[in-house]
Image 1 (cartoon, rainbow, N blue to C red):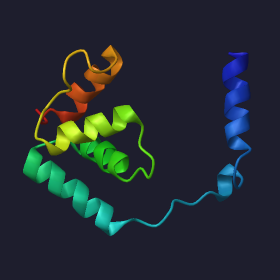
Image 2 (cartoon, rainbow, N blue to C red; image 1 turned 90 degrees about the vertical axis):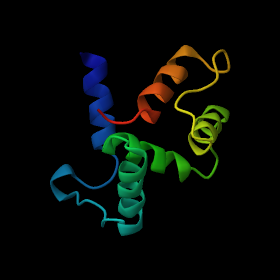
Image 3 (spheres, rainbow, N blue to C red; image 1 turned 30 degrees about the vertical axis):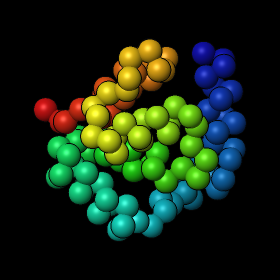
Length: 99
């Protein structure tokens, strides 16, 4: 528990005091892209948000690039054996249509 308290204290020390924090203004273009993914691909909103965030990375990792390439190619999972198991599971979760 001590580690958790230290981490939370350090995070709270970054930026303005908690009581003064304000959310950033909405990004209407981002919202439109998310809504389009939800509508066209049938993704869950949270998955569409994460994919849009990853697409905005200026220096994506090799794994992020592989995930985005699969998405753009219309695949719903990564090639078996091409990534760690956690990444394959994340891809399955992100790229599957919402139920």
